[in-house]
Image 1 (cartoon, rainbow, N blue to C red):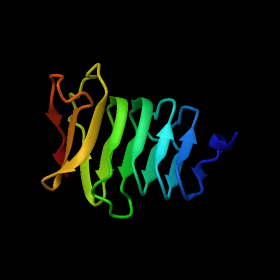
Image 2: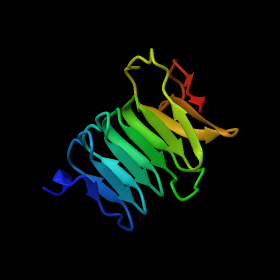
Image 3: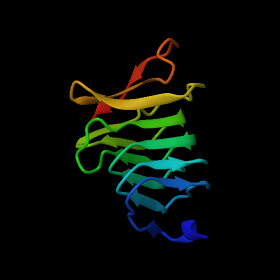
Image 4: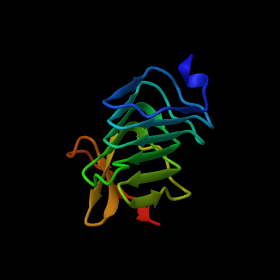
Length: 130
Protein backbone atom coordinates (compact mmCIF):
# COMPACT_ATOMS: atom_id res chain seq x y z
CA UNK A 1 0.00 0.00 0.00
CA UNK A 2 1.52 3.31 -1.12
CA UNK A 3 0.04 5.12 1.88
CA UNK A 4 2.23 3.10 4.24
CA UNK A 5 5.13 5.34 3.19
CA UNK A 6 5.73 8.36 5.41
CA UNK A 7 5.98 10.78 2.46
CA UNK A 8 4.58 10.29 -1.01
CA UNK A 9 6.37 11.95 -3.92
CA UNK A 10 4.87 15.02 -5.63
CA UNK A 11 3.15 14.29 -8.94
CA UNK A 12 1.65 16.42 -11.70
CA UNK A 13 -2.10 16.57 -12.15
CA UNK A 14 -4.71 15.54 -9.65
CA UNK A 15 -4.26 12.88 -7.00
CA UNK A 16 -7.14 10.74 -5.70
CA UNK A 17 -6.58 8.88 -2.44
CA UNK A 18 -9.07 6.20 -1.43
CA UNK A 19 -7.87 5.84 2.14
CA UNK A 20 -7.61 7.51 5.54
CA UNK A 21 -4.31 9.29 6.24
CA UNK A 22 -2.72 8.64 9.62
CA UNK A 23 -0.38 10.76 11.71
CA UNK A 24 3.06 11.05 10.12
CA UNK A 25 1.84 10.63 6.55
CA UNK A 26 2.42 13.49 4.10
CA UNK A 27 0.98 13.77 0.60
CA UNK A 28 2.32 16.36 -1.85
CA UNK A 29 0.90 17.08 -5.30
CA UNK A 30 1.66 19.60 -8.04
CA UNK A 31 -2.07 19.63 -8.86
CA UNK A 32 -5.19 19.00 -6.79
CA UNK A 33 -5.69 16.44 -4.01
CA UNK A 34 -8.96 14.58 -3.39
CA UNK A 35 -9.13 12.31 -0.34
CA UNK A 36 -11.99 9.85 -0.06
CA UNK A 37 -11.48 9.21 3.64
CA UNK A 38 -10.30 11.11 6.70
CA UNK A 39 -7.11 13.08 7.31
CA UNK A 40 -6.15 12.53 10.95
CA UNK A 41 -4.16 14.91 13.18
CA UNK A 42 -0.46 14.73 12.32
CA UNK A 43 -1.13 13.96 8.64
CA UNK A 44 -0.32 16.61 6.02
CA UNK A 45 -1.72 17.49 2.60
CA UNK A 46 0.23 19.91 0.40
CA UNK A 47 -1.13 20.81 -3.05
CA UNK A 48 -0.33 23.45 -5.64
CA UNK A 49 -4.07 23.44 -6.38
CA UNK A 50 -7.19 22.69 -4.36
CA UNK A 51 -7.71 20.15 -1.57
CA UNK A 52 -10.99 18.22 -1.25
CA UNK A 53 -11.57 15.83 1.65
CA UNK A 54 -14.67 13.66 1.49
CA UNK A 55 -14.43 12.94 5.19
CA UNK A 56 -12.93 14.67 8.22
CA UNK A 57 -9.99 17.06 7.71
CA UNK A 58 -8.23 17.07 11.10
CA UNK A 59 -4.61 17.31 9.96
CA UNK A 60 -2.70 20.09 8.19
CA UNK A 61 -3.81 21.29 4.75
CA UNK A 62 -1.82 23.62 2.46
CA UNK A 63 -3.67 24.49 -0.75
CA UNK A 64 -2.09 26.80 -3.31
CA UNK A 65 1.34 25.83 -2.00
CA UNK A 66 3.09 27.41 -4.99
CA UNK A 67 1.40 30.76 -4.37
CA UNK A 68 -2.13 30.33 -5.76
CA UNK A 69 -4.30 32.43 -3.41
CA UNK A 70 -7.36 31.31 -5.39
CA UNK A 71 -7.02 27.73 -4.17
CA UNK A 72 -9.55 26.32 -1.69
CA UNK A 73 -9.83 23.59 0.94
CA UNK A 74 -13.16 21.75 1.12
CA UNK A 75 -14.14 19.06 3.62
CA UNK A 76 -17.28 17.37 4.87
CA UNK A 77 -15.92 18.00 8.39
CA UNK A 78 -13.34 20.78 8.36
CA UNK A 79 -11.39 20.80 11.64
CA UNK A 80 -7.73 21.19 10.60
CA UNK A 81 -4.91 21.64 13.09
CA UNK A 82 -3.47 24.17 10.62
CA UNK A 83 -4.80 25.53 7.37
CA UNK A 84 -2.73 27.30 4.70
CA UNK A 85 -3.70 28.90 1.44
CA UNK A 86 -0.76 30.28 -0.56
CA UNK A 87 1.25 32.27 2.03
CA UNK A 88 -1.64 32.68 4.52
CA UNK A 89 -1.73 30.54 7.67
CA UNK A 90 -4.62 29.96 10.07
CA UNK A 91 -5.20 27.73 13.06
CA UNK A 92 -8.53 26.61 14.47
CA UNK A 93 -9.70 28.00 17.80
CA UNK A 94 -9.13 25.56 20.68
CA UNK A 95 -12.87 25.28 21.35
CA UNK A 96 -13.70 24.48 17.73
CA UNK A 97 -16.73 22.18 17.44
CA UNK A 98 -17.90 20.02 14.57
CA UNK A 99 -20.36 22.00 12.46
CA UNK A 100 -22.41 19.17 10.97
CA UNK A 101 -22.21 20.50 7.41
CA UNK A 102 -19.56 20.74 4.68
CA UNK A 103 -17.34 23.83 4.64
CA UNK A 104 -14.95 25.50 2.24
CA UNK A 105 -11.93 27.62 3.15
CA UNK A 106 -10.75 30.35 0.80
CA UNK A 107 -8.69 33.53 0.86
CA UNK A 108 -10.71 36.66 1.51
CA UNK A 109 -9.23 40.13 2.02
CA UNK A 110 -5.80 38.76 2.93
CA UNK A 111 -6.94 36.12 5.42
CA UNK A 112 -8.46 32.67 5.38
CA UNK A 113 -12.22 32.49 5.72
CA UNK A 114 -14.30 29.35 6.19
CA UNK A 115 -17.91 29.34 5.06
CA UNK A 116 -20.60 26.67 4.72
CA UNK A 117 -20.44 24.92 1.35
CA UNK A 118 -24.12 25.79 0.87
CA UNK A 119 -23.91 29.59 1.11
CA UNK A 120 -27.55 29.74 2.24
CA UNK A 121 -26.93 27.73 5.41
CA UNK A 122 -26.28 29.36 8.80
CA UNK A 123 -23.12 29.11 10.86
CA UNK A 124 -20.44 31.29 9.24
CA UNK A 125 -17.20 31.17 11.11
CA UNK A 126 -13.76 32.57 10.51
CA UNK A 127 -10.32 31.27 11.43
CA UNK A 128 -7.74 33.70 12.61
CA UNK A 129 -4.46 34.48 10.87
CA UNK A 130 -1.29 33.50 12.70
